[in-house]
Structure formats: C-alpha cells, structure tokens
Image (cartoon, one colour):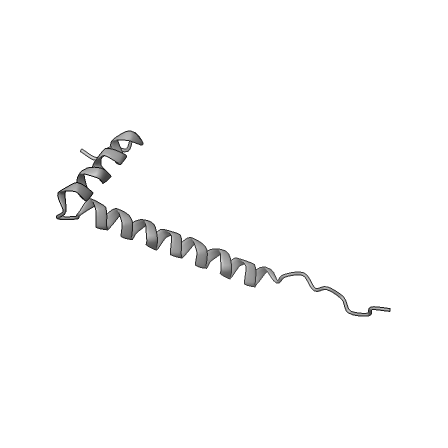
Length: 60
C-alpha cells in the first residue's frame, strides 16, 4: 500500500515563477521595441514603423 501523499504546488513558488515569466517577457518586449524603434538601420526601423501602423498603434 502506498502511504505517500502528493503535496500541492506551493503558491509562493507558482507566484515567483509567474513573476519571473512576466518580467522576462517585459524585458524582451522592451528590448525589441527599443532595438527596432531606435535602430539606425533603415530597413529595421521602417519595418517596425509599418508594423505599428498595421496594429493601429499611434507613432506620430
């Protein structure tokens, strides 16, 4: 007979994992926007500009 009990995942661990994922996603998003938006490479800057317009995001 198996006497081991399965313990539920602690909420503090789940919350820390969720906050880590949110933080990394925010960092990645800011990096991409910062790199593309302020890039001196014209093709990258124009591509990001066109994407902003296609998403109806104001940029002017």
